[in-house]
Length: 364
Image (tube, rainbow, N blue to C red):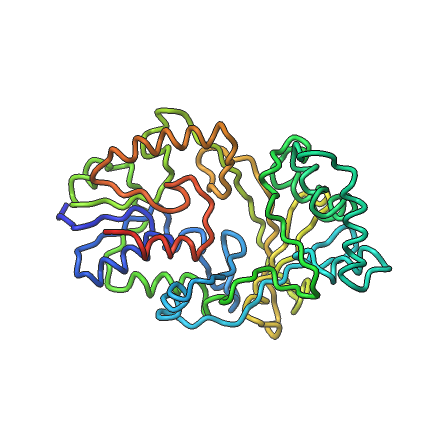
């Protein structure tokens, strides 16, 4: 195998951003990817003329102007604004929780003060510091909203009762006393026209990429064939799980092509009751404002207990896993030739813009 300045393990946003930076520095770079496609979990694929988010919905949002300018230097973004709706039984509510939500929950709510009165009254049942997620949610939005829009969804997502989940998971539950259905407050928001795969492909132009290539099949060979290695895979796997396995939550998807123009009228609908078993349904054509195609593609998203071999989606940042991750990071710091970065390698949940920001600011 020939020698490279850098070998990058993984072609997701972190790896692609680093690769693009290195190419611009005239470095000789190889990207290896174990999947049969680039772009990691933001991979999109055209199905019947519709860009399908194959690993769940991804909406780009940021307050970093340098990150926004960076991604727009490769492709044009549309004006998509994330405004999911929640379905509880046959009732529909706006998300995030805002005045549109409150005025439908309580028929006498018109003003922010009206909503506050209901929420403050219901919050009184929690005395002292919330001890679990259920108490934390009630202390933020009251029992009515908790029971309808938080409890079932969360218990499906984590496969545990809310009373058994730590409070910190939901401490940043967005609550707004305005009639605004925009889920994010970030200044810049949208989705790449033509899909995320197109964005990553442009970032990797002129760079050697090898798909269907597992780093661990020839770990020593790759380490000996470069000056530096950028590793974006799972942190514990790099060290052969020598200290134990970090825990994750996973997802399972059921994709359907339907012979109808418009299935649900919105890109994302969250199902907040315990039934059905899926947490949300994604109708992909609405990400690009396409309601004219004679068909539509919908994806039913089911939470899943992670077992080795599945895709890893959500870190479980309880004390046990955080302590184990810290021990692995101590080992990582001793790997002088290897830079660990990204969601999997840092055991940290990142938004897309934070991944890019970190890759842009990293010393190489």
